[in-house]
Amino acid sequence: QVQLVESGGGLVQAGGSLRLSCAASGRTFSNYVMAWFRQAPGKEREFVATISWNGGGLDYAASVKGRFTISRDNAGNTVYLQMNSLKPEDTAVYYCAAELQRGWYVRTRDYEYTNWGQGTQVTVSS
Image (cartoon, rainbow, N blue to C red):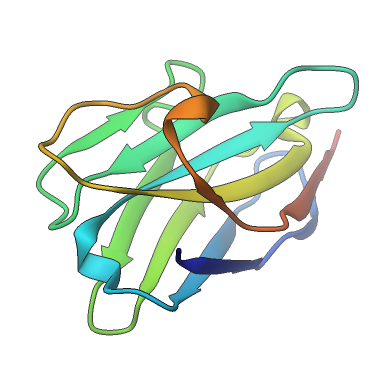
């Protein structure tokens, strides 16, 4: 198991930016595919972005492509989500997720990840 702790959420105006961080501990971070999901009130949790163990594989939800960037620092055991041009519909609790990489493929379903953080709230005001 790997333990995940998110940080960096907050309140921002539409058009603004935030950078989320997810610090991992407990296992070899570079063995894990990492991802960000989000859940808005009354909605199901949805995929946002994912990154392979070495950063060579990336994928984004259509709703955030071109505005959000996922990256990782394996030496620092941290994955990031840079969020630009934020919109009110980006308001949600953002979760970091990890799964052992057994070959790279894009995992967009929450059941494909066994390790989760506690979440960090992002609120975008109009």
